[in-house]
Length: 156
Length: 276
Ligand SMILES: Cc1cc2nc3c(=O)[nH]c(=O)nc-3n(C[C@H](O)[C@H](O)[C@H](O)COP(=O)(O)OP(=O)(O)OC[C@H]3O[C@@H](n4cnc5c(N)ncnc54)[C@H](O)[C@@H]3O)c2cc1C
Ligand code: FES
Ligand code: FES
Image (cartoon, rainbow over all chains, first blue to last red):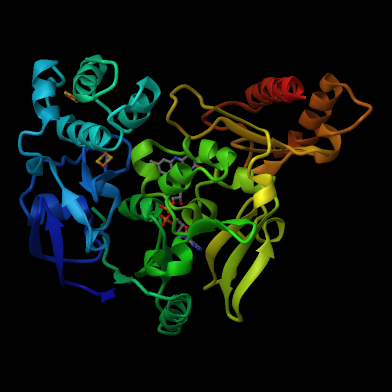
C-alpha cells in the first residue's frame, strides 16, 4: 500500500464502512472528529498521556491520538457513539462515575474492553487497565465502582 | 495534529521494505521505518523529528511472528508489547514490558520501536541484554543474524536503511529465576528513575539497568558473582564502577540514583539468596 497526499480510504467505524478522504499524516482522532463528526473521542494531551481520545480497535483500547487513520484500514473501530447503551454506560450513571465528563468517553471505552476481555478481572488487573486514563474531577473510586459493578468477579 | 505531510508505505515483504527505503533515499527523501508509531507521532506533533515518508513494518510476516520454535522464542520486531506479554513465553520480558508506558499504549508500542527508539530508556532491551539472545536484521546483503551484544550497545547499531526484523531468545533462558524492579520518581506510570532486571542461571547472576545514565547498561558480571566479596563489597564496587555512567536528571540527582541502586541491588541479592 502507498498513500500520498489526499487519499481515499475505507474505515470500519461502529460496524459501518465509511469512505473518507485523508492525508497519511492525519491521526485517527482527527479523522473521527473532523472528517466523520464523531466527537465522542476527545482531544486532551495528544501525547498518549491522558486517554481522553481512547477508542477500540478490534475491541482493544487504543489512544487514537497516537494512531494514524491509515493504520486503521482493515480493522474494526468502535467509538463511544457505537456503544449504544452498553452496561458500562448505565453503571457510570449509577455510580457517579463522572463530573465534567471530558474523560468519560475514554474511560467508558477502556472499561467496556476490560469487561469484554477480562470479565473476571481482579483489583490489580482493573488498576492496570484504568491507569491508562486520567480524570481531573473524580477520585477514580466511582469509576472503579462502576466497572466492578459490571464485572462477573466477586464484586456484585 | 501532525503539522506536516508525509507519504505512507506498507510493504508486504522484507525485500520490498528495504528497497522502498533505498528508492526513497535515491530520490532525496527522508524515510523512517514505522513500528507502533507512538514515538514518531508524538515527536512529529511538536516538529521534533524530520521525515517525509514512513514505511510501516506491520505488514511483513517475519516482523509479526510470535512463537517458541526450534529452541528459540521468536519475536517479530512489529509485535506489540501487549501481545508479547500475553503470550508470556519469557516471564521476565513480560514483567518488564508490562511496566512500559501504560496498558493501552502497550497495545501500540512495538518491541522494535522500543529498541530502536530515541527515548533513552529502552526498557524492553534489559531482559535481552542478559539472556542468550540474537537479532535478525535486514541488511544490504539480506537477512543477517547478530548476537544481541553486537547489535545493541545501549542503542541499536543499525546502518542507514537497515531494519530490525526479529528478536530470538534461547529457550533455556526463558524460565530462569529472575528479579525485576522499576522505581519511578513518584507515579507508577512514568519513565523509570531506575529499572533493574536480573537473571540467575546455575553459574551466575546477570543484571542490567536503565534510567541510570544515557543508555541501558549491564552491571559488572565479574563483581556481582565474585566469590571473595561479600554483598556489601559487591554493591560498593558496582556503584563505584558505574559512577561515570550515572547522570542526574529530572527524575533524580546522581547521588539519589546511586542510593536507590544500592537498595535495589541489596534487594536483588537477598531475593536470589532466598531461592538458593
Ligand atoms: C506515552 C509514552 C510513554 C512511554 N513510556 C516508556 C517507558 O516507561 N519506558 C520505555 O522504555 N519507553 C517508554 N516510551 C518510549 C517508547 O517505548 C518508545 O518511544 C518506542 O519507540 C515506541 O515504539 P513504537 O513501536 O511506537 O515506535 P515508533 O514510533 O514506530 O518508532 C520509534 C523509532 O524506532 C524506529 N523503528 C521502529 N521500528 C523499527 C524497526 N523494526 N527497525 C528499525 N527501526 C525501527 C523508527 O524509525 C523510529 O525512529 C514511552 C512512549 C510514550 C509515547
Ligand atoms: S489525547 Fe490521546 S492520550 Fe491524551
Ligand atoms: S470527569 Fe472531569 S476529567 Fe474526569
